[in-house]
Image (cartoon, rainbow, N blue to C red; front, side, top):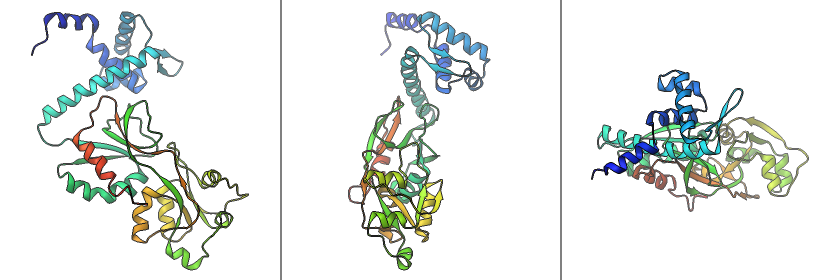
Length: 310
């Protein structure tokens, strides 16, 4: 059904320049006129003119122009959210129609800890359930910014509310001490928090997602040790877990991530205190993208054995 001519005229009156909207979206997403010009293959002056044209037509400022950076104004943020969502929908339809009926590649962002310890062990089951799934992992050190990456979905740990996407709960989390059977064969198992604080601990750096350190874990339990005995400090959580598997000491076990190692006997959960976090794991889909059957299947696959895996 073709739109009425009056509607077309209305769109043209209210949206005077699609080019200006495209260039505004690039500037807002990249937070830079220079980067937007490079991406679009035009001059910075041309991009500036298009944004200024929009501001003049709307009668509002879209950006705060600072000395070395720009940020969206309240009006600019409102326009960006709508424009970005609309452009992503249009791009998605073009991509699907141009590529035919074959399954599109799904780009999933996750931390290395989640991808290595939770996702990859379940990849075979995911492929069995979705034979056409084409997955590309985008491994992130910290939380991925969905506005700046070509990402279809991201796994995040947090409260479930983010400004750049809509979230679906995967599962909750519990944190407790773990070590290897090899370590227990040569060391006395700590039976109190004080004894645990003096045992050889393996530390990993906290992340922007709110993962806790040993000190934070003890404090959540109301225990403040005078000193912690660190046998090893690691930047990555995966290194800390591997070190614990190889008998180097006791690490903090994030239950959803170390479940497979515990089930296989590579790690042992020490019968001490544990802390159930208020935050949880979520799949986050950028605003404007649809939760496709592939993403729904990914969610189901990642939830596999989650209810009783701790």
